[in-house]
Every structure is written in structure tokens, then in C-alpha cells.
Image (cartoon, rainbow, N blue to C red; front, side, top):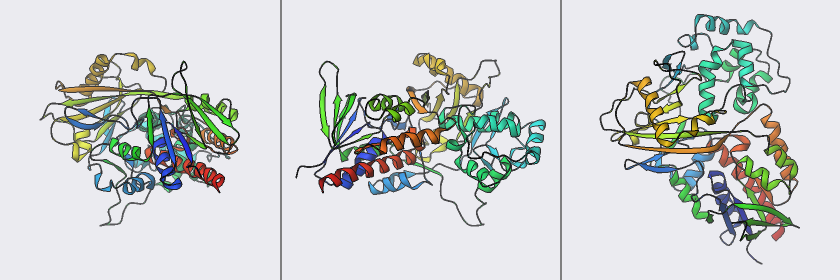
Length: 470
């Protein structure tokens, strides 16, 4: 009996995790090929050298409280590489002032008036205090934009000063575009259960304070030598073919053929099953003929582009005693110039393993609809980010090294109705034997969520392949 053959299209974390899981399910004889159109694996996991230090310029951490990434890292023998953030707190710059992110909020949605007393105006606080007296929130199973709901219940300030910067940090999106059910599922669930008000929903969702002497597990983690360490270990599970776009996906009975490479001299790869772990535009194109219903739904997903500007500052540069700062949309510096960055991470404060020399900072640029900001060349982006850093922190030191990393269309926008859209994609694909989809478009943009989709896709394709073999 010949060895099973499976192709994984896309060499980001979702594709590589799917290939690793397929190896475990199908055994050492299986021919597992990952086809990636870029010249490096890892997708948005990218560790580079900045001033001689290993530094992540894509995703910088994973949610430690979700099990998928933590368990995969342990399975790969990398558990001793896991490190967690320091106790430095994050902050938000809104209404011309920088303050710590308030506690007792759910992604910025307050659970009490006191939680946001230092962040909102007197009128903003009045609106929050009055929110429970409004008619109860009734979603009746529908979705709603986060921004619309917040304005209706709290007025503009909670969305502009708190939720907007926090969701912008995760999705590079705007609250008016993002849907409640996909971005704040816990809050939506509390409202479905009858919470009635946003204050009550947030309060019932938040964890109770820990008992004295009890320490909660860390929320986030990363790898000491960079997240590309995870990429390199996963890549050992399959044959990785780089620099090869997949031009077409064709079904031949129960088999699949991939057309890859240049249009002038295409190559063909014949396999028993396929995992598609690519961004929405590529999935739309590849599914257009084989699963048109899924292709149409992928076409509805909007994307945001962003850039990460890494700065290595001279030894002795003093950063604020914070892990970073998120910027509210529309903020301006004292000189009247609009801020370019949407966030800064003070990496040498946030991560103990990055403390020392040089001092490392990363600025994030770009929200949904802000492509014009990314049309500047690298030098202009570095200058704009340095201007913002100076205005926010007083740091004027000339960097000893810089690097701009651009993520064009890197972040899918979880709009209103996103869960229904994803359900339509998955239902349509499930009707086609030997095919599965994975990736950040589906159930979360974070590393653990991507791994979860990879595990599910690998299990589906492996079941098909093994069923045929038997």
C-alpha cells in the first residue's frame, strides 16, 4: 500500500501546525508537503536580528491561558524556552493624556464606574453610571457592531478611549467595523444569558480577584529565543517548498491536484487530501471552482494592513516604567501633528529576557482603512514613529539600528456576522471529502486559536485519508 500524501497550502503557524499534527496522525511514511509562496516559513511569526538581538517583529506572544500553544510547545520539547511578561503595566494615551489601562474592565468595557474614573470625563462617567437604567440589551441572537453598541449604551468615550485602542491592538480594526460576537464572545454570551446591561455583563464575565496568597497563572507567554524557534521545530514535520504560489486546486474524483509555481512552467502535486491555511483572498481564489459557496464567503472578509517599526536604542536610554502604550484613534501630539503609531511596546520593560543592551522598542502602525500611512518609505515611517515616541515618552535618542516590517493584508477583520460567515465556510468545505481549512480568518487571530483550527483541519483530512486506506 502506498504512503498517504497530503498537501498543506500555507506555511504560517496554522499550516505548519496542521502539518505537524498530520505527521502524528498519519505516521512517518506519509508524504506531507507544505507549499508556501513566500521565501520563508512562519507567516506572521518572524524573528529577526536587531542590533545583534533576536527580536520578534510579527506576533510577539501567545495567550498562555489557552492551552493549544502551551501544549504544542511542550510537545515539541520547547517548554524550557517559555518566558512571561514582567509586572510592568500597560497604558493608554487618550484625550491627550497617558494613563494605566484600568483594571476591572473587559477589553475596556467597564464593570463599574470606579474602574474608569481616572480615564473618562465627568459626562462620560455619568453615562456609564446611568447605563444599567437604560432598557435591557436584547440581542435576540443577532450580532451588532461593537462601536454602535458602546455609543448607544455609554456615549462615545468608552469606545474611543478604552475599547477602540484595545481592539485596535488585537485586530488593527475599528469598533464600528468589528462585530461583538467574534471579538467579545464572553460579553455577548452574558448578554444572551440575560445580563441586561453592559456593566452587568462585564462584571459577571470578569474573574474574581485572587484569594490572598494565590497567584494567577500568567496571561501571556513567548519563547526566549523568538517565536521562529517554534516555526523551525514545526517545519521538521514535513517537506517545505518555498517560493511557490499555488495557482489552482482541482479535484479528480477522491484525489486532488495542485498547480504550483509559475504560470509559464507549472508543476503539479497530486495528493489524497488538502489543508488550506492561507489568508482569505488566496482561499477565495483557490476555492472558486471546487467550493464556490465557501469562496464567496471568504470574499466577504475585509483585511487590515500594518507595519512594525523596531527600534534599538542606545544603552542607558530610559523608558517609562510601563510595558507599552496604546493610542486612541485621532490623537495628536503637542505640536498638532497626528500620531502615526497606534501602539508602542517597550520590549525591554515588558520582557525580562530583552532587558539590557540595546534598549528595544517596537511601534505598530496601521488600522483598517489607514493604508495611506503605510505608503511612506521605511525612513519616513521610522521618523514618524520616533516623533511619536518622543512626544509620548520624551525619548530622543538616535537608534543604533532600525527595521521596518510590513504586513500587507495581515489581519482579517471580524466584522458583524463573522461567526455566521465562518459557519458557512466550514459547512461548505465539510461537504467536500479530503479538504479542510484553517487559519486566522476563522476563529481567532491569536496563535492558540490558529493552532486550534490547524488541529481540527488535520484531524478531518487524516480521517478521510485513513478511511480510504482501510
